[in-house]
Image (cartoon, rainbow, N blue to C red; front, side, top):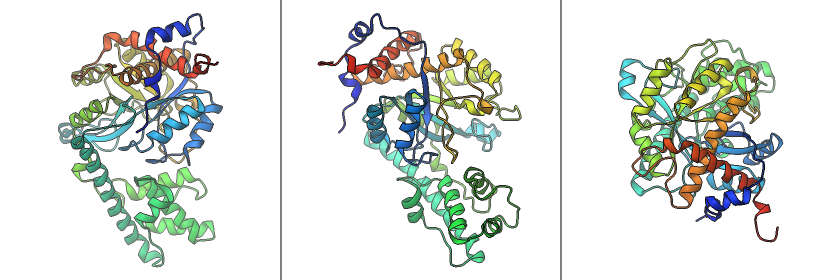
Length: 418
């Protein structure tokens, strides 16, 4: 069992003493939400993540894989080695049945009732009771049943076109995934099946179009991101000829997800979709006042955004609204597509964030850092034992987290012999 590096950090009064007189920046660059190869990611390896983070001077980074914490150990070790403060997060997909029946979209623009939901600042090393661990394993198992069924559907489409070709779950997992195969792995496998078996790009496109039931492709085979997104959209999403609906067991109720996150030592966090490129919102997020009331009514005081999706002025107004109401706000880039974009967070069209937005996001990172630090010392963090939030202590936790991260980034100065 690994040790939590924060458990060896001195208590907060010593942290303050060690950092006394030191000029601490108002904020640093951070990214609180990236997916890694342990689910699906733009990154080929974690070393690519750390290299980019060093180059972009990212001070704190959050792993945020779907369903699994398999990457925590390698992520922890890489962050320590590269002097990047690690945030231990996870992401689930749940279901709000009442909203589903009413046709209300939450933060999935295509599926009413479906909700993406994160846990921030989980305990490290990760641990759950056997019953809760079994619930997580069941969700993962159900997701893989669906993936295998979609592979069978893909093979039914491929066989009439070229009976010599087929896809295999084991082969896809071996080549492209870790322990979890997702639909994006299937899209990648289809694209490479065309490239590896047809020499000419025209023939490759003809093969893929034949799976689309004659629908013309608008992507270029050499554009990995566009091609795989198109394959996913045409074949693997709802309405696609290889789509298989998920078993309802794949989508735990939100209360169950919150309980798992709380028991794992984390902070329940709602991922906000906000505006799409045409300026539209889901029904659940269309009114900030109603969203605020909905989230606080179920004990959620933390939200996260992927600002690259959002128009700058809308993002700024929204974040200022929730920040003034005491919410913890975290930004990330997700990197859950094939596109290897920078780790530095920007708004839509790569518009840089201003200092006020960076400060809001940095405060969120500091709260999560303080939460992890306190939990590592056997104390309560932002979430109390009964699941309620320490929102009145947000400013104190922000200050503490800032000290914790600064100590981490400069710890060599305070260790004996330095």
